[in-house]
Image (cartoon, rainbow, N blue to C red; front, side):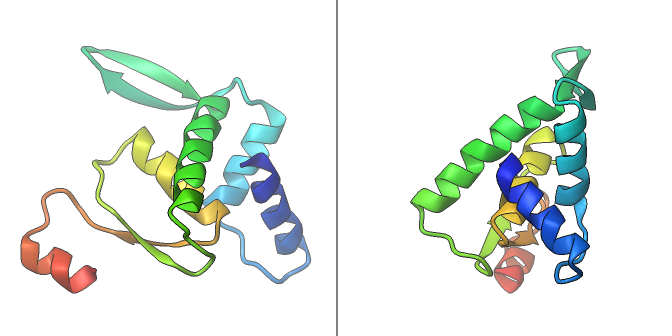
Length: 116
């Protein structure tokens, strides 16, 4: 994951790829992987999630996308509640140059069909 984000940063400096949230994440991951970047509520308490933990989740998603044969430019539909899992999946997709199509868990069948 870090290598793919770093490659994206290099392309951005060369002007051929616009910056995105993956570039900002790569910066935080490279500077301080143990730094808490996110907080989420779990069983009546708030839990910190570090850059390294998010990177590990994103790497697992990238491995899954690769096993399924996704290639740069392919679209993936993402239907997950807002939170750390959404961030990890989104970062994984960005790192592989996939296009995320957001579907919301409370969308109706007609809207999901239109988006997909």
